[in-house]
Length: 206
Image (cartoon, helix red, strand yellow):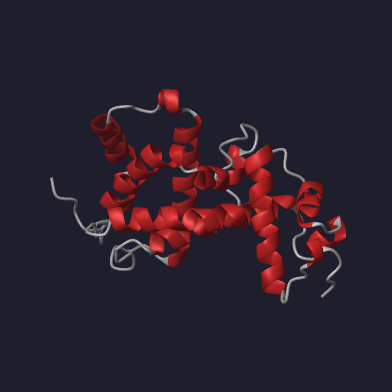
C-alpha cells in the first residue's frame, strides 16, 4: 500500500487507512456539510493526493455513507434499548418509527445517513442498497422473532426500504407530520401496522 503523504504518519494497514479517510471526511462534513464535501477536501485534510483516497473509496458518497453508518451505531443502540420489551413486529416498528421521528432531528450522523440535509438527494439516500441493508440490520436487532411472524430475511429488506422511505418523508417534511404523539401513533397503527399483522403475527394488545 502506498504511504505518500498522510501528514508524515502513514497508516499501518488497509483498515487503518480507510478509517482515517472516514474520520477526515467526518471533519470535512462538519465544516462544509455533506453536499459540499469533495474528495479533494478529504485528500487535503489527510495530506494525501486524490488518487490515494481513490485507492480506498471510489466516490466521496461511499465515504460519507460509512461516516453515517458508524455515527448511527450509538443511536441504534438507544433505539434497541427503547424497544427491548416489545416482541410484536407491528408494535416494534410503530414505536421504532415514533422514536426515530422524534429523535433523529437532533442526531446529525443519522440525518446524514438519510441525506436529510440535501433536498434533492434524500429520496435516493433512503433507498440506496447501503441504507436499506443498514435498516435491515437494525430490524434484526429488535427483540422480535421475525421468522415466527412469517417475515423472512428477504421480507426484512423490503420492510427496511419502506421504513426508510416513510421515515425520510416524515423527517423531510416535518410540517406535515402529526405533532401530537397520539395522532402519529394512530396514523402508523392504521396504515403501517396492518401489513405486519399477518396470519402468523402476534396480535397487538389493545
